[in-house]
Length: 141
Image (cartoon, rainbow, N blue to C red; front, side, top):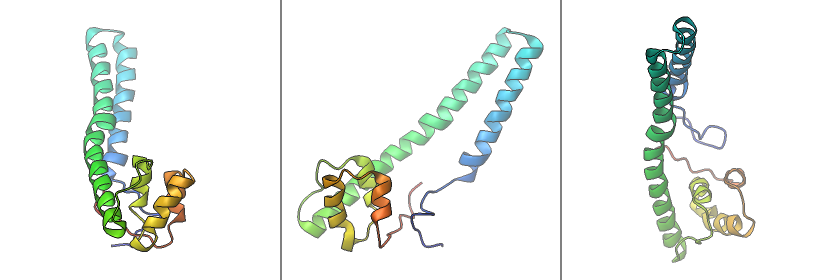
């Protein structure tokens, strides 16, 4: 397994990120041709509604539920890690996106980076760039 770092930490799932968009694009093209050929009939409208439904489900709902569950788990894990290292819970001013970015920091730099993220309102990307000793998250879906 490749060592994780800023350049390669995002995970792409080929069936979801590459194949599905191509299938949906093909469906859109087919819908457009069908409407041109048949006109606005009940079947063409139903095909278009089915396409819109599949886009909505695939890109928003299906991906959203597991991501929310993972985000909650990450917040809990990082809160526990901060508590173990400092005896205090995470600063409540840290946003969820900041906490998610902080998970890549090693224990040596985690606490200081938490303070810096709050005091300087660092963006998640700035937090990731500030990490010197990258700790991979190989379980993120």
